[in-house]
Length: 378
Image 1 (cartoon, rainbow, N blue to C red):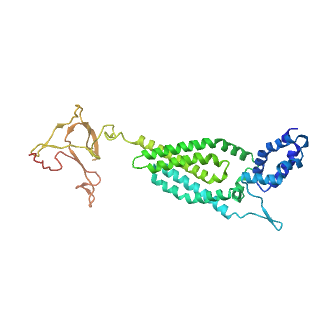
Image 2 (cartoon, rainbow, N blue to C red):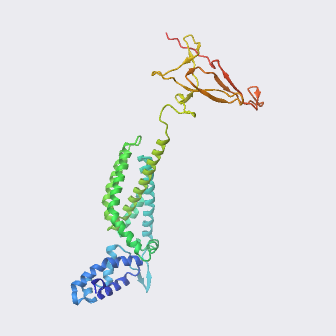
Image 3 (cartoon, rainbow, N blue to C red):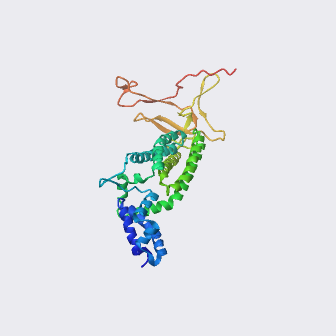
């Protein structure tokens, strides 16, 4: 019979289980699996003299051994008994610390998302709002540990979802294995975000860069320790929430930038017309016609415009459709000026510039629709 199934080990563990019976079954199984190898070593050392009494002389009673396990693992203490009745320890402060931690994590996640999606260090003030919550929960855990926290009904209810304990043990194993990787990735992400803040236009991200570098260092230091020292769990979880929010915000920023660059015009000119021909702009105003005057202020006609490379400046020409009376494109050329197209509107009497309201008014005017005063060059 192997030492893992030695009768003395089973008998000793049975009393340990009884002493821990107030804990969720999954946690008891985890504790038993952790201490079983140690008990097996004691049995091997005792040899043929292995008995529960001998184990007690080596380790103390199973009940005291269970109490040591509780303390080392920061499990909740056993219920106290008063007058034969089981009484629970006071949990009001522990519950306040627990919910403060959750609210702090939520606030940190939002702060990280806002900071990264806008790349503006002004969003760091949101992170400052979480400091009182983190300080309250972190201070409680640093002073009293997490034993009472584990005994809260809401926490135990979550722990009892997996009644077999198999999923819990696997999840804990995965988290412990991935812990160094997570904090390494978190530190790298915070450094990248800090550099992005520093170089982003109009962000003035020096404070943001320094803050995020400090948070990256804090994560590398606190994160691995929080696996064994549960007093740091509040800081570790809040920082993790900030990193998750920052990652989501940074992804949103990158995707939004990519979409905006895909839809942007190849600035500033030319802007494509509906028929594929380029348009002519003066500032942000589209130019359909050009009028040229001589030194005496007289308009010139039949002018052809070219670029310095000899390419004709061709833009769409517009006219009136004979049957519908609408303004329509009639082709493209580089001849200026063109006839000015006047599109009429309906007046208070139901007429359109004196014409029947049922037929839109459109007219091509060859005259210059304005007067100019040519400045004296002397």
